[in-house]
Each structure stands twice: as C-alpha cells, then as structure tokens.
Amino acid sequence: MDCLKIKEIIPSYIIHCATDEDVLAVEEHLCVCQDCRRYLSDQMEKPRKVFAQLPTKEIPAKANTIEYIILSLGAIIFIGLLILLFSNGE
Ligand SMILES: [Zn+2]
Figure 1 (spheres, rainbow, N blue to C red):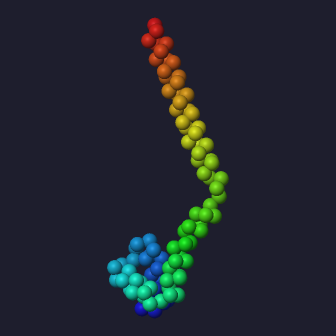
Figure 2: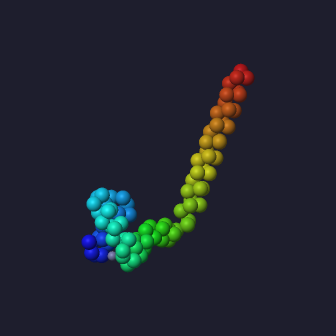
Figure 3: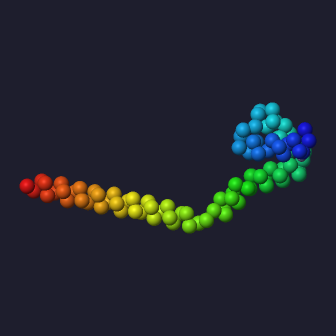
C-alpha cells in the first residue's frame, strides 16, 4: 500500500475506526516508512494542540458555577434545618 492510501486511513486508525485489514496495512507500512510514522504522530498531536488552545477562562467559570451550586445547596439545607428545628420546638 502506498503512502497516500495510508495517510487516508490514518485518521480512522487513530480513532480506532479502521477495519482490521486497514489496521494491519497501516501497521505494516509504519514499520518501513518513517514519513508515515511522522505523519501519524503529527495527527495524534493535533487534538492535544487544539485542547491547549482552548481559552483557560472556561475552567474558572465552571468552578464558579460549581461553587455557586454548592453554596445554594448549603443555604437550602441550612434553611431546611432551621425549619426543622423550629417545627420541633412547637
Ligand atoms: Zn509511507
């Protein structure tokens, strides 16, 4: 199989969606072709680079949301306990 064909299969190979036949062909080819090995590692690096470029603002925003939910739950539980205490007293 030639390099062009292998490079067509590599994306599905990476996400484990290639057929057994294609996987075998890719792995046999990678043993003998440095160019395709480099291509494969470049393709595998891509998602990591995409994640690295994601704005970091999203993480504190999510943390704030979780904190807000926890605080709200805490307040609800506190009010619930107060109501319980008062209703028991009567
Ligand atoms: Zn090749």
